[in-house]
Amino acid sequence: MFETDTDGIHQEAATGALPGWERVEQLVQAAHDRYRDTDDGTVADYIPALAEADPDWFGICVADTAGGLHDVGDAAVPFSIQSISKAFVYALVCEEFGHERIGELVGVDNTGLPFNSVIALELNGGHPMNPMVNAGAIASTALMAGDTAAEKWRAVHDGLSRFAGRELAVDERVYTSESETNSRNQAIARLLQSYGRLDADPGEIVDVYTRQCSLLVTAHDLAVMGATLADGGVNPVTGDRVVSADVSRDTLAVLAANGLYERSGEWLFQIGLPAKSGVSGGIVAIAPGKGAIGTFSPPLDAAGNSVRGERATAYLSLTLGLNLFASPEPGPSGPGSTSRTSTPLDARSTP
Image (cartoon, rainbow, N blue to C red; front, side, top):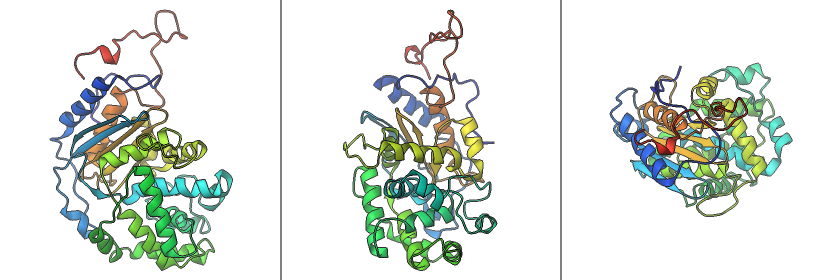
């Protein structure tokens, strides 16, 4: 199970809006204070450039759908987006192909196997099971608009930049490092091609996918990108409609089922939010209609998820009332009452 370390913290109900500005500021700071000295986990080293990350980096940002931003710690430190990019590329291809067609092409079901599994692809006749595993992500990238790899890359770059509300740059060192170690992704792409699931050149698509994963973001960016999905596809900072409300809904559903790979059920059970993690140490978690949490801390657990990020997200899900499955406690008027028997969150003096 995820090590959330939230025993004894009161669960707020997932109804209404976020607490007031000052209370959100207080709770984001409290989450950072609570977990900044956690020393569990190890920095990823299977991609050489990632091994150089400072294990002490820890940033949190909460973005609300009104455009409010709450940054604490190393929320402005850039890192490569890695697998988190899958969620936003999926949204872009959903916008292009629609609900039914993208479900047929890429799928939405959890494989129950690791993100880079070849067996999952073979067991399902070469059909990617969902866009959050590498096979589905590579197939999604291949579906991006453009007749050439260069045009597809421009579409990816432009789309993810619109989600972030600023032009994103590629970390060339990470891109080079990953290009030298991505033989498994190349094999997955060729296997997709052998099943007739990839029309483009496998090597070129893997190169676009590698660049996509090497885009530099911050915890601040992740929160804005997540809040764009939370706000029905409208970037709450720029006001730009990036995707439709229907696409946002579909993307969040896929994230809830598959965003943490074979541990997605545990994550939803413990934290109750659609989310996506990346091997650089980033996590984005989205509360529909409310906003998103972006975290960054390089040390990872055995499943490849940021230890501090998991715990901070769990804490904020509880204290901000974001868990999708939490209901108000029955009040004195009976089961249908929305009044609470506990002290309202924004009236408490301490987290």
